[in-house]
Length: 306
Image (cartoon, rainbow, N blue to C red; front, side):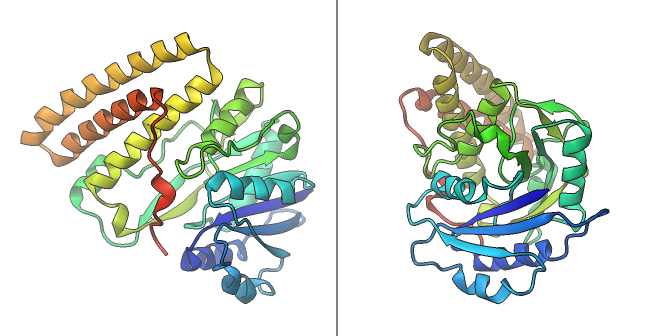
């Protein structure tokens, strides 16, 4: 079984080093797979090369380094697929994450046991600095959880493993119009599910994500929700006829807006995390509506973390 673990990276040398160190500690219950780790640096100046040089002879598995000069997440992701598609399986991780030793072994077993095309699992936040109480009370960085073995209609590249056979019927792969807005992974895997691909949740295949202080703010949470809303509209209009997509979007925006108003007002006089939850709902509704006009927010223009 040939597996490619793909890591797109952009100006996070410390995060990349922590990730590679964690990958070097992976263990397997049976024979080790034929594994390769592919780092695609999205910085034209090759700022991650020094990290690669430091780790290339330390991991126990081949470590490759490539540069994708075109700035944008989908360009880096597609470069990963071009390089790794001769493997049987491909995994993606972000450069601000660390998997525990059992991570890939758990994923490969689940992929086989469930007869899945794609497996995905939790992303557990780890704050670089202790967050304020309202952040913890709101659970704003907690990933959505599912019953182990649940079938899903979406996955994300922050924690995923899939058969390369799913690439055969997808053209293009990651949508390169979504350069810095994010969401090209959601778009990709929703297309996989729409084509009949089986995406399965693996509860024990968690990874840990570092949350820097720059993300621990009301403003960042609202911007993220706005961005997710606009991306959701883009995906919906790409997959459904215009009248249907428009109607669904307006209904979703109205529901989210009403939910937001219902939380903001009582939250102001009771608990900050409730008010912030309401603001996020309002921001999501705004993103849905502005997405109809083709407007979006390039969240990944700015790098958080190091």
